Picture 1: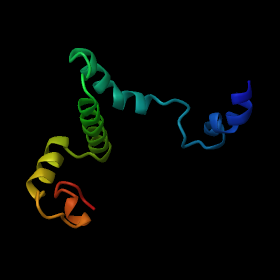
Picture 2: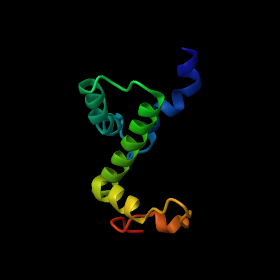
Picture 3: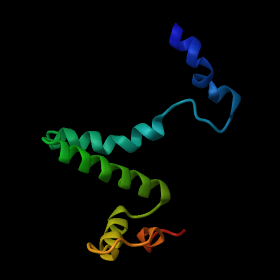
Picture 4: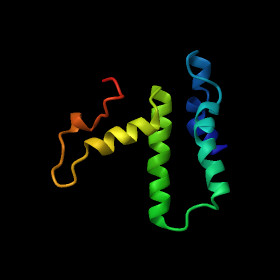
Length: 99
């Protein structure tokens, strides 16, 4: 009851703004592939594996929202990355993404 009283306005935002969905299905669907992958691969066995999966999941979901092929995004990034010299920020955006 306290939480509803405290956050009730935020929970009902969709009533005031027609462009806000009343569900979080979009977010749930974006995460579904990673939940399935975790199930099939028996999860991660290290902190590094968890962090890597989180990074890849973020890249994949962002690319899908932007309509960019995740494979091409990562390939372009790695092709343009120089290990010894930090690149300027604008050069980190792969060519397959329009800015």
